[in-house]
Image (cartoon, rainbow, N blue to C red; front, top):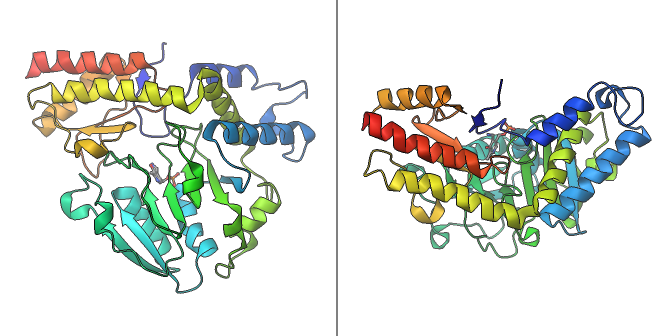
Length: 361
Ligand code: PMP
């Protein structure tokens, strides 16, 4: 059985060398006489893995010392609820820019706790563009401004960091972290579920400027408190050790490959192959996103009919290109091209798209 090119939006393809190392170490790890999933998170052996993963992630993403890095159980959605609890006072206003499905989710998770001002919303335009910064209706007194750096379903991506003045910018980087160099110092908080670019599902990274940890926030249990997690190096309770280990291996792989500058180059090359196949198809394939905000990570597109969409997905699978079905919210096709997707995968997809059109166009 050979591995297919896997275009899943997440959980997503991982580097084969990472999977092989995890496989080799599954029964016995590091001379401890047990698997890493069978030992205490407080053992010196595991603590070293955790510390190394943080150090490597700091190097990879360029995280300054005045930012804490939390490795928490669960996913990005949980963080969307914890953000207002930690950063905003009861009833305080927060500003959200909604550029797709995940921005809407972030609003929904915050609304029970704070007054959410939708500063801009791309939904009327089908989330095919990001509302221009000049149109945002920001509040004067917001606790933070929230954006979704890359919308995994709608395929729209911020290509520059918006200026929101002194108010902390909070960004959901779940589907684009480490895909290119970013200036962390422009953000108050960056959060990312790991299951796209960082490793396996079940662990989420929160990069938070330390001064924001001093905010009183709202009444909350210790386990929902970023400050408590930071004080205990994300070991307030039993962390997802296996996921943390796999994340560490994936980050090491990205560093060995050349880091975010190299992935920016590769990701641009991969995305341009697929966009060229769409744009050069004479309208057979359609991507409706405004060119300036097209995502490099997730490329949604449509064929002339739902029937052809379905045939495309089935034929692609038979050709070793899997998980191309679009999200049910938009339909069509979606190709996700995260860091672990090799150039050959994008080349194979572009060639398949050309062949499919010849046969069905
Ligand atoms: N934000 C974005 C940008 C996502 O892509 C996803 C998951 N696809 C989420 C949030 C939700 O993440 P989780 O399922 O880990 O809660």
